[in-house]
Image: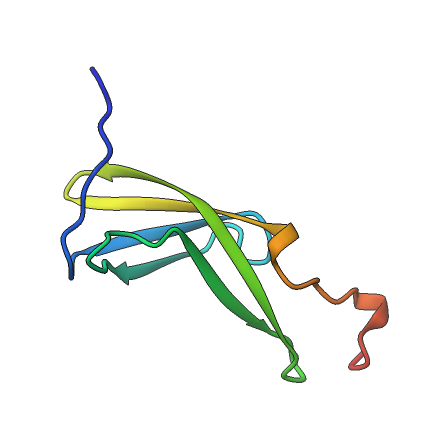
Length: 92
């Protein structure tokens, strides 16, 4: 049985899974653009005092699961902003 890459039409809903980094194991639901799923996703992580860090997840791998498309993104630590070390935080 050969596996084919699923397709999405503009407005279709798909499920996103995140691997690695602060969002490891999290998922989200997104809406497809005219190009299908995104090549990468940028997420904003905020700590308790409001400091924000941009995290980049890329290298999408898509598969059809039942009637839904699942797209898995992997954390790109090199292209993400550095995460603040707990020892360097001022809110402890």
